[in-house]
Image (cartoon, rainbow, N blue to C red):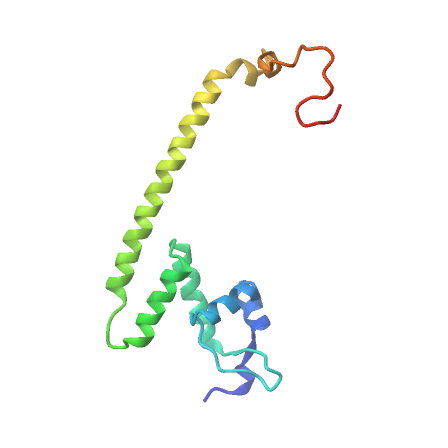
Length: 151
């Protein structure tokens, strides 16, 4: 058994890992962090092993896995000790890659729209003409207020 001195509260774990307490509570609720129970004052207690768990979760999150995917991996890891999780992780990474490629395609589409807008509005963007020239009310007299309300 580890010494009591090595036990830490969730606040200490948060300070040591840089992960907010609220997120660590979520991790614990999902079964992603090893715990050593609760203190007599009902504080969650962790030991050094929790640091490893948080590091693994953070590493998988940095690769784009969702918390649900990480929870599934943890379930397999803990329930099937003799079974490697590598093949399932490979499948999840394939899914992350597909999601990422979809997002890259969305972002490339956005860049094309920005390029087209800049090309179409080059004079306005350079200050040679004004966007107000296209506003149907910009030259009108007698408006109660401009769009947005303030006179």
